[in-house]
Structures are given as C-alpha cells and as structure tokens.
Amino acid sequence: MIADDRLQLEVHDLDVMVLTGIYSEETHLPQPLRISLTVDLACAGHYAPDTPLSASKNYLDLKRAATIFPEGVHFTLIEAVGDYIAETLFLQDKRVQRVAVKIVKLAIAEAGESIGITLVRHRR
Image (cartoon, rainbow, N blue to C red; front, side, top):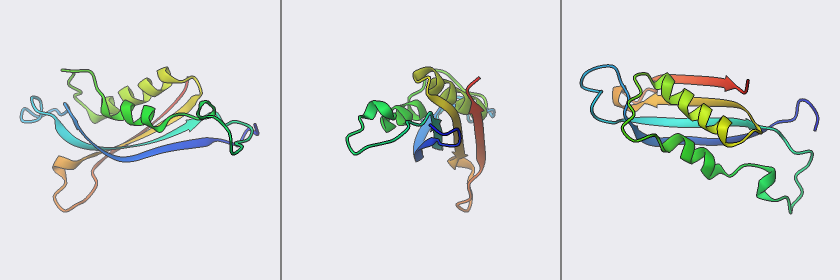
C-alpha cells in the first residue's frame, strides 16, 4: 500500500430518530437527525474482481453504527451522538483510521436549510 492510498466508505442521508437535545421539549422524545458517514479504512494493495468482502468493510456495519443507539440513553449534544458513532466504528474494526460524522437537526430547519455539525475523529 502506498502511504497516500486510502479507501473511503460512505453512507449518507440516514434519517434517524435519536433521543437528544437540551431544551425541555427535546429531552423526552426522540428527534429526527440526518446522519452521514465517511469512514477511512486501511486500503488493500489492490482490489481484483474476485476480492472478498473481508478486504473492505460491509456498508451495513456503518449503517448500523449510525442508526442503532443504546435504549434509553439521552445524548445532550449531537456532538455526543457523533462521538458514539465514531467510537463504535473504531471498536468494530481496527482498520478504521478516520471517521467523519455529519449530523443535521431536521426539526429546526425552517426553509430546508441544513443546520448541524460535522465531527471528525482519527484513531489514536
């Protein structure tokens, strides 16, 4: 593998209901978030037509990390949601080198704008 080579896996625009927020009207009901992930994975030297999935990562693992949260856990900040997703992916697979999580708070958009964060974490 050449040092600059990298494989980026992407899963975008997952609409997920997450228990998050700081205001009283937000703390008891899940709110809709749109979550997108870009995950840098250690890259194989070459991908031949018959390369097995084990040389990459199943996209469903990314989707699950962004859509399945511990029951009853309230994330005060969406930044904590992003950290939870990144940490889940780092724990899942040692080849994950970097995770970028974009989270848009759908409930506060008034005219279709995207309001939210992008959190980028690197494996330490």
